[in-house]
Length: 379
Ligand SMILES: *Cc1c(COP(=O)(O)O)cnc(C)c1O
Image (cartoon, rainbow, N blue to C red; front, side, top):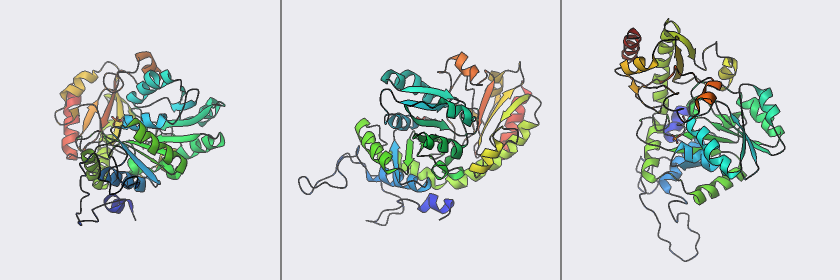
């Protein structure tokens, strides 16, 4: 089945009982048991809910895994995955990560005695050198948020395997439409389904998929034990979003290509960050592991130009956190998504004060270009 068909018919779609084409929302906390101690398929909705299960099965299908898990947010998915590890375990993580993930690692997980080393994942030798006897996993995004750097999933998962460690990849930016980390050797793939999977800026959700039976068993246990599961209404919303992922991504991409072209030729732009840009140091890796490069662009204004005036001048493109919705969203990471990362650390990681991140939506291409042009006129 090709991806566009899988998005609509993959996993569990529809309802066997009634023929309903859309998976019903099982808005129930508990299920009647017909006999005592009968080990029923459904017993309590934290443990399992049919609507959530339909989404989990579909995501396992879309990521070519064997088991999927849906959580109340992308952050809850990451928290649950990191909870597979214990005090004294060491995890190598990407230097450039979603700000909330950095906060979770530094301000929560470290308090429980997990050890982390942040490494530039574009450099496989640096990753190799960061391994210790107690290293249990490597964790990274590709492309990263917000610098859109690319890590070689195949190469890094080979290094991890050699050291007996697992590879966990946050695939939020690429989506299963453009990239399948499990096919390249990763063991767990994570999504903030709040972004492209949901696609309409109307739900907060997270997904994890694995093809490793031991990890699947652990995650099922942790999902139920920690309890940050996705409710049936939100599970249904994410499933509805997924059906149009392919159609949306094609328009997103078309708009992105036009905007990239414009930004590359705009003299007020100092630098453009994009995985599909031949100037990206890992362009060849991106070409090899991604089907397309996605609708996220970051760029820096020339020194002295005000990102504040620029983003506040936009009329259609909305100043907001988050990304991946049908509407174009723009933000300044230093102030917004990465505001929780100390400035020194942020600058060291390459996130300048004037960096702007644009999530290209599916509005009319010309309207988006006109909006950018008039905002550049104001600075
Ligand atoms: C948004 C995001 C997250 C966190 O997901 P939430 O659903 O907001 O909890 C994690 N990783 C990346 C790459 C993200 O963009």
